[in-house]
Image (tube, rainbow, N blue to C red; front, side, top):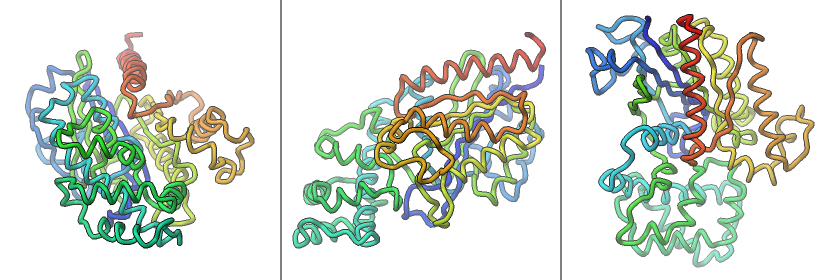
Length: 386
């Protein structure tokens, strides 16, 4: 019986905000092998090699390369999904692990407020209390958020005051016009708890934290007799050719896209819609020869954010072909699903779809149970056992 591979492509055309210089379309890959084969060389290597110039690492058979490099980072829920696999199918997070996220939570708070302060100038929004708020804004603006390890009282009070300002709230309401992490409001609403001396991040805090990494993110976990390992790979248009051919004969592909990106534009192209870019990557994936015999599982993520956003940002303004009712999240997500499904040129190929909220552990537990069944059925069909 040949080896079983499971590729997971988690697509998002934008990174974590204006702090990053290299704006990337990000993907990820997950693959699976029978556990007994995983434990033999070369699969015991803990750190995957970084690919360059589209070449496979030396010393590995062509079909056994499953790891790749990633440039930039995105917010489709890719990292959150990987964390959920650790919570659901792995060992979870110990108190020691959680303590390692404390400074990252602090950094996320500073990064979010700095993004809004800069956007105030860009959008020409004034503070409600200019005299006091400008001074507090300059205090926060002067911090290098990447080096933050503590959350001292002057900064806590400044951020709380800024968040309460009507000007900042207007800026937050216009967040689709600039780059702001989805977790910004969550952390700013929890600032008193986060600033407490005995603060220990919860699983929800960890799920929502964003880390602008440029290296490989990897997490292995066992599911019945199969071991999965998730790693990020480059998703830029120029990078896709370097990794996409490396998934020949994979059993299944999971493609993840954010429902909430329908009204957002790419940073480097004000005329290009993020969802259109995700659609382009999805079409590339499902039409490549290497994936013609792979089952395709589509995760339409951030359904919770869609439900919030659709109340004031109308889908028809960005996709004129939408003829459904306004302020209707169900109709909107079904329309978005249909846009992706219609990209499939093979009428006999089924696109298995799931609406997800990657920060909701029970939702991901339920959805991944269904995905597991799809994957196992695909394996049985592939080996002519059904």
